[in-house]
Length: 256
Image (tube, rainbow, N blue to C red; front, side, top):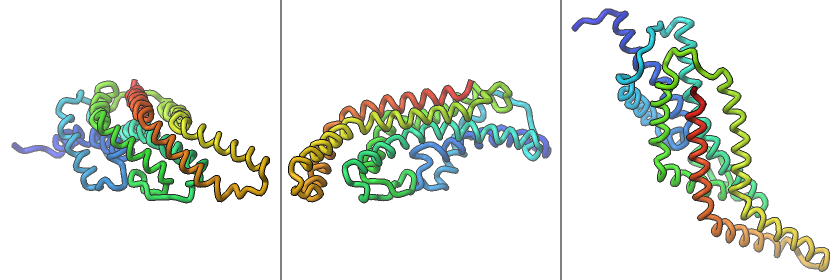
């Protein structure tokens, strides 16, 4: 069956714009966007998801991809996908911040390791929190929910639709405050215990100035910090579940 160039372009557009939104989501989202995740596998997954959902998406007006309107339409798809993935990435950033604050307070700021999620050096506590968060995220099928949400976004915000939030970027920026609030809640139990230990050692130093506080304080602070980190793990899992649910809900509410 022969196809004219115009017909071929129309057919390819049905896959091109969904591919842009899905690939942008996979680029920014946790797990999929990790530096340890192969780029070829990410591109192949984006092509596979786009091929599966493109036939059932609402029809949209054909636009020349090389025209100014086509470039703006492609940028819109990239923006929506990046915003949805960035919302989930900020949830993992909250864990990194919580681990950094707690590690600096415990005296473990010098103990760094490479984070496979972001490819940068982070304290070991941040690495521990990120690993736990990744396991919880996969356990609640967060990766599947992300793919489901990006599929539903084509129904709520079809390709070429002009009815989309112009304050999309502002909503993402405002959501960043949740990242710092969540980091404080995650680190608060162990952080409070370490703070009380430091206050106690301050009182002891005033009472006995000859005591070598550095020889005694660091081992005790680190030990107490790890004990309370271990005791807070059950509540950490429930807080992560709540954080991921709110992040997924926010990612879905980005589109009208």
